[in-house]
Image (cartoon, rainbow, N blue to C red; front, top):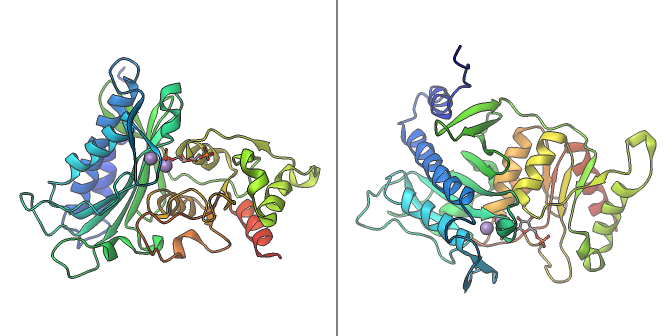
Length: 335
Ligand code: AHG
Ligand code: MN
Ligand code: MN
């Protein structure tokens, strides 16, 4: 007997589009192209070590970080795959200082913006540890002929879609269109993402806290107390929690989404606004997390309500199971 396969991502997108009778098909087209880009990056990631994609390029990115060859590859793959589709008015990438305009030689008039972290967790590439691609889609709001920065500086709550592709023990796409969260696993033998995790809901409380505790001496007292809470012994509330920290946000987030738990990257003396980027990391994951019943805050404020002021803005991030995040919100509000 042939195996019974899960719903393909293509079918899922088509079914979702039927919920929006005014939809022109552009959004489905955009998602379809995005998924192809993800498969190309998956192919490169799974060959790392065999072909020349491991190591650093020798240059620094706009964030002042060393660029890995795979960072560069993933970034260029997304740009080249998406720039000529006609669906986008522009793109913003963690790796590029300025907005990526749609060249005049390509179709213009795209209705959507795409912001992405082409490869998250890139310090883990050479050690064969899970990494991912994170993306966020908004509708264009300006009347400008091409996308302008204001089109990208929209609150997270206005996202049309957000997702990530995690290149782990399997490659998975986790996606929300603002109507629940679904996970699709890539079956590399047929090249299709198949629905494997329908309607993901994160537990209201977890048993895991994820934070780079090497920075503890640099945290502000409120962050220290919040982290301390999860380490304190209290049978009734299932504490202490376990520490799990991969150092790839996408992988730490994904595990906590499924098992329950909280990921924290507080502000510290070296990074007064935290390390993680609002548009490429915090906002898309916050949208997914809320859609799965979780929560995400910065210094007490919901990530999805923050009005971005610049493309590469950083924010402190507390994200995961709702009750755990609310505990942090409480600690952060105290003096
Ligand atoms: P990126 O690889 O896109 O630059 O992101 C790295 C981020 C994130 O993935 C991770 O959670 C965090 O950096 C880890 O930072 P520390 O090494 O400071 O813990
Ligand atoms: Mn990242
Ligand atoms: Mn990155």
